[in-house]
Amino acid sequence: SQKFSPMNVSILLDRLYQAFDNLAKKYHIFKVETIGDAYMGVTNLDGSEFETHAKQCALYAQDAIRAASQILIDEDDPSLGCVQIRVGINSGPVVSNVIGSLNPRYGLFGDTVNTASRMESHSMPGKIHCSFATAQLLTQQA
Image 1 (cartoon, rainbow, N blue to C red):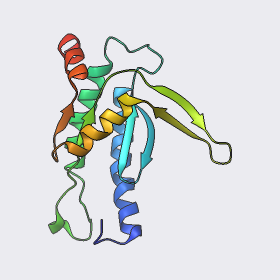
Image 2 (image 1 turned 120 degrees about the horizontal axis):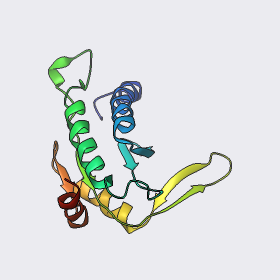
Image 3 (image 1 turned 90 degrees about the vertical axis):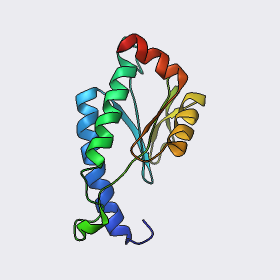
């Protein structure tokens, strides 16, 4: 993003997040927040998707990687290629809350969130870094 103007980065992220939002609807992923170029989603917050939540996240992640790989980094310069994202998935308890009053924000907090974030940052482009907890759930939900 250092090569691009803030407006171009904003336009790219809008195209990318619109694709992610459409996939979130398909897989019942609740978009919690976007910070910079990070997109965080969650499922099973109310416990109603316990039997399928890990599978939903994994399928969403696969499709998000596929969708991103079709989005040009710069529509005016296709030679720059397409977006490559990294994904981190973790399963476990979280605390959710609305923070603040002037511009309230809904947020998720806890080690589960922190671990997923670290997994994403240590993942490889185009890959899903999955925790052992999520891997165990996927063997039951696949």
